[in-house]
Length: 119
Image (cartoon, rainbow, N blue to C red):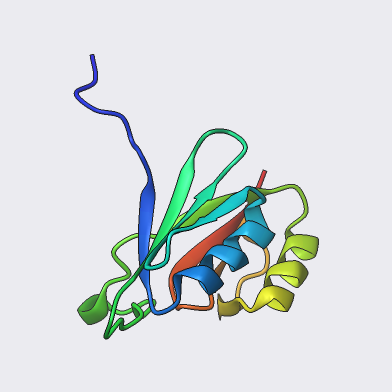
């Protein structure tokens, strides 16, 4: 029996509203703005949250001395179409050398790494 259940994944960032909007465009869901804290309520019941972090410094990827700490894997049906859309929304590619893999690595507008993974 589990001791707890996951309530939300929370990302520090300089602008919670902007980052929540990016992920709402990517994942869908409803943005609930509470100022310094913004929730993105997803249709499957999960919550991705964003909190203002003064002095926020984005992780470096890949860099052993400035670890990414974590990343999100987002499953998509069409890697090429999803890539075009996340780039249009403001994501930055972090690795473009090997296009034969079943995943591609990006940074969101605040610099958090995430992967688009073939579903």
